[in-house]
Length: 239
Image (cartoon, rainbow, N blue to C red; front, side, top):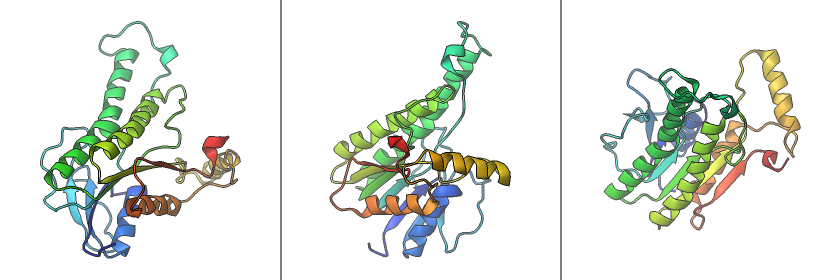
């Protein structure tokens, strides 16, 4: 990997996106770190990055000024919603049906349309070398109250395969992680959550952010892999 390569990481301010940005910095690469707005200033990185702001709920305006070699799509939107069998027949403003529709639109915008628009427009300006998108191990299973999110992730899987065909020879792949970061802060509740997740994996343990980072960097650099979705979930999908 050339030290002069420039990687754009969306959602680079926190969690997995930040870890990916840091991993690229550790390789001596130039990193363009996306965040939603100028006001959402993250903690300092371990080395200088070049910031780029875009609220992915909105249509893409100006592209980053830098010429991008690799695109890592880490930003996403997750919102719990209504169980669809509990929706009423009413669909007017303020109804549960209207609320769910708006949530559906937001998740499709951030998790599908925004990544598509960014990848296609960057590639049109100058061909990208690779794109890696973060999905979710549950992209093809759904649960009541989470259907809109799951549909957006399943559509993302289709997007990865479509981009691989449309943008070749740019390589386009995805990583579908299981839970690697607890969603609760209370130590007792966190331990209970981690134990429950571990019990549902073949490997019997919860994963780590570094597992996801390693998978993303593998796919980004693999010269003969494209259109693939790599699950990093400890075998959770197989149970």
